[in-house]
Length: 192
Image (cartoon, rainbow, N blue to C red; front, side, top):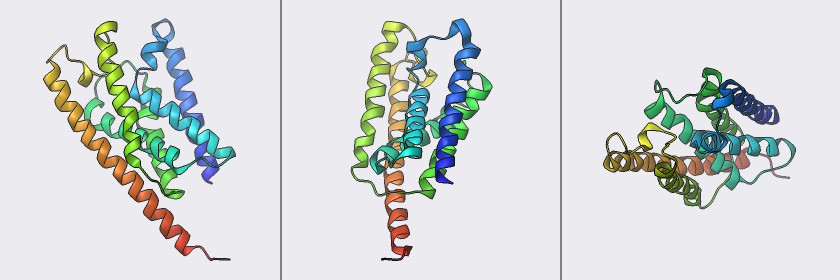
């Protein structure tokens, strides 16, 4: 069952990415596409899921994928739902809603102990730095809440602090849930 779920995550993300590239056609820009946190987190989670079909993947790596996908789903629900980010409907639904839910379900079914969840926060920090440095150079921002042009950097800073608090709380929750659930599962299993 868990391998089927992992394969489903991989295939759904792959189908959404292919659909997105085909639907955008000449409007597809490779660098801009891979400048979305949503795309990066989904591709990472899909690769982790596919690897998990064939061999064990460390709890640290799986936990990071869960954190990034949960962040994707929650930020979409709180800040992006109803905003046109030029994503075709099918890809939008899979990448922002379906895949994040499936990754969380997979984590709850097959939890693992994790340590140093704070290290997971390095990717969102690097992503934010990249986005804010590249934005003025490319004159393009992947998300409206990271674009300082309409209301200045003060609004961007407030939103980033809000999102950072969410990500930090989610990192703790993913780690705690995985560790506690894994401990319960191992306590229930008979010892040989």
